[in-house]
Length: 138
Picture 1: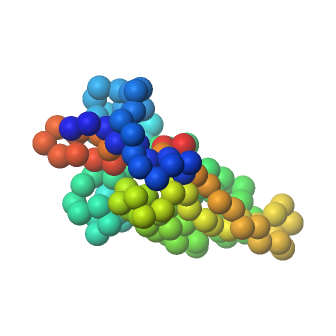
Picture 2: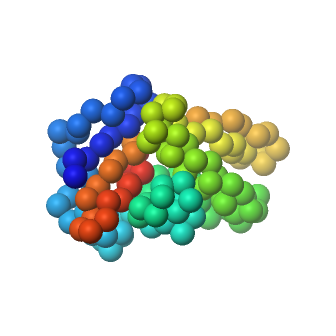
């Protein structure tokens, strides 16, 4: 299957000219190599049984915040909501219903001010042997 890329600056997915982060080994290689975190269990209803993974760097930056923020503000309680927001946004972007971006909130250093954030991402369809998969990257 051809790779499909959806970006926030256009609504139709062109065929990419480059390789995915997984190179020629597909989604399983990216997950096994530590460059992606599989979230299929959380995304199954959205992607119809396809495997879904998020690039490790994207997950750490936008879903599971740095440990200092978690210790200081107990923000881990919202991690599930941020993950669901990213997966839902990726689903809508994959169907070309919206640009590839999602919204979430952070807090400032003092922990008192909630700051709304918008983050764009790239949704790539990759061939993973018998099944196709989706990789969410930056």
